Length: 247
Image (cartoon, rainbow, N blue to C red):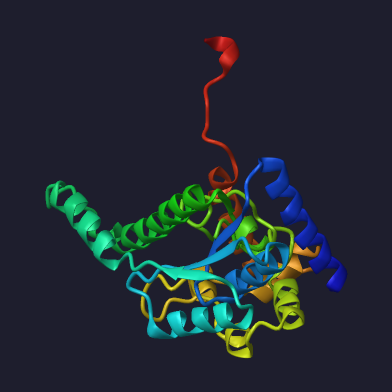
C-alpha cells in the first residue's frame, strides 16, 4: 500500500509541475474519499495544499468529520458556507419559471446538483486565486456507475482515486491514518437528510467492487450496475459534438 501511496504522491507532484502551477486544492466533505485525497495532497505539497469545507444544507456530523480530517493531516483549510448563495440562486431560478413548468418531481435532485456545482465553482475560484489544480475524489465504483454530478463533483482537474475500488480506498485510508470515525461511516454525498450512496444506487459498493474485479455478482445487481453505467456514459465524455466532416 505504501508503494501505491508513494506513486500517487509522485503523480500529483508531476501533474502540478507539468501544469506550471503551485499546488492542489480539494473539497473536504467528511467522507472517506475526500479524506484520502486530503492526506495525499498534504504529502505531495506540505506547504501548498488546501482543504475546503463548504457547508450547504449539510449535517453537523459531516462538518465535524471534515474537521477531524483537516486536523488529522494538518492540512491548511478554509470554510465557505454556501447555504445563502444556494438558497438565493435556487429561489431566483424557481421563481422565474411558471408553476405549471416547474418540475416538483425533479426539485430534490435539482437542488442537490446545484449545491454540487456551486462547490465546484468555489473550488475553481480558490484554485485560480492560489494557482492550484482542483483534485477530485471519485473512486472506481463512482466513476463506473456515474455516481457524481456532471460539472459538480465531477468537474475537476485530477482524479487520483479513479482506478481504486471503494475497498482499496478504505485500505488506503487506514494506512494513511484517516480517523476511524470517517472510515467507518456510511458513504453519503450529504445531499439530503438520511441520504446514502448505496440506498440511492440500489446496490452496494462491495458488489460493485466485485464486479469491477471481474468477479461474479447476482443478476439483479449486474443489471443495476450496467444500467447505471450506460445511463451515465455522457458524464465520462467530453460534450457531444457533430461530425466535423459533414460541416
